[in-house]
Length: 260
Image (cartoon, rainbow, N blue to C red):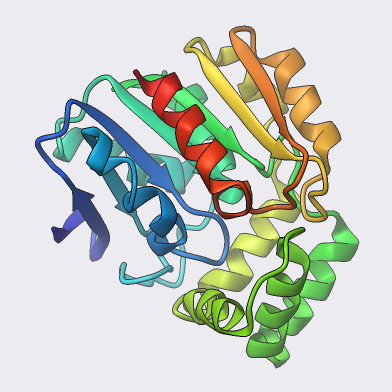
């Protein structure tokens, strides 16, 4: 079922809550510039295994409200804090992909991981996000030809072959965001880092990263593995930046085992 949760003055986030009566809860934070639908191939499988899956669109993306400001990691993490409090979530596994992984890390360090018992970082945009060069390219594209920029994102995302209809679907997801929020997150990924937050994470952490990731290098996953004390790194040898889809059977199995 879908509903909205107010997280800030005039800002409601869209929540997709699948199998609300499930035995364990998994909260998914999507990547930039996508929305909760990127985890479609998890929602198909994990609820049938008895899990409650909650997908949320962060502010500015998907069906959520799109204010002009509030796109720092602190504010995005604060939104998740309000959401977890409003839904009275406890003992949750927090899954963050790419920028969603960065938000998850900031949530754990800024809010002591309230309500979260396990963390999964998937191709996380951490400890650093975009280089100045990458950010400039995406920013220029966003402000001048956003559909073409989104095509570039899609083309560089996957290591596995994707069909044209899949590519179209993926692009459309990115275009549901507002242009101003799309641009604001690029600046956040360029200007903010998460090094200091990593040692503060004190829950079991699973790090999944594609060895062919062209967006966030695999070396960053290795650095996170060193800095997060109770963490394990699982390389995905047949994936780029989209292991949640590219090796979905392995991904879903790993997630189910970890959450158990």
